[in-house]
Length: 157
Image (cartoon, rainbow, N blue to C red; front, side, top):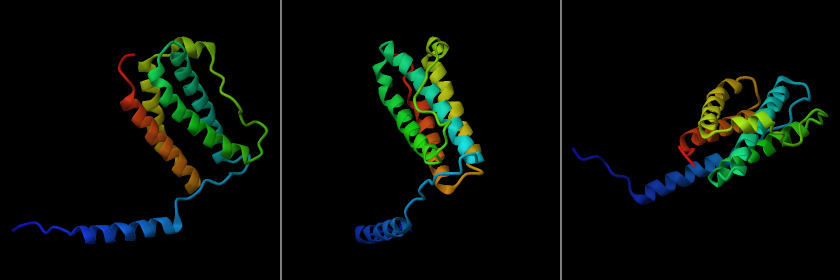
């Protein structure tokens, strides 16, 4: 018995219907949590973590590892989105700029970055439990990117 093949017209119609259904509601948008909520505290932790990660990438880039610029830039984009959410809470303790430490710069290596990306990606699912849908989507996206980084980081420079 031959498997039944769908015509291109049927596939296109089904795809258009699926797109219409998805775009009707759109993805949930993160909303600003209360200034001292557990969600805000989590966002602040993520900001500090992203700042450290960007510092590690920056130290390797300063040493000539230009291949790492796109990886760092994606972390910077994550950091910018996280900061927008925290800034919307009008919290005076929100961080405003990355502050890589001197010890972080000394310890930067590709294997350390790969390990850091793996651990961060593994942590993200546990962080989704008590956050709003929009923030959960952002954290899940960040985790997916971190997992991709862990796999895509070059073995040597």
